[in-house]
Length: 149
Image: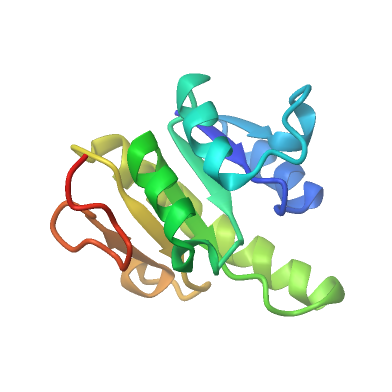
C-alpha cells in the first residue's frame, strides 16, 4: 500500500517508519513537488488519484470540519490519525512510539478491509485494542459523514 504522510507529520517519524516498514511505500507530502500547502479538501482526492491508499495525519480536528470530512469520504482513501499533544523531544518520542506500535497492525487491517476505514492510533499498549480504534464509516458514520457516496 502507498501511504502518504501529511504535511503535519514530522520528518523524523518518516525516517523511522521507512526503516522498519518495508512492504509499503511511505512518502512524505513535503517530498512531492507541488504538494506542500495543499488544503485537506484537495489533498484527499489528489492522493487517491495519485494511487495512495491511506494518509497518516496528526490533525485531530480534521474530522470536526464538514468540508474536510466530505472530501475524505468522497476520496475513498483510508485515514490514519495519531495524537501529537506534547511538545519537544518527549512529544516526538510518544508520537513515534504510538505510530511505530500501531501502524503495522493498522496497515494489515487496511489491506484486508472491504472499504474505506478511519483509524485512530491510540497509544503504545501491547494489546491491539488499546493501540487503535477501527471505524467502518458505512456502518458507523462519524459526524458530518455524507450519507450517500
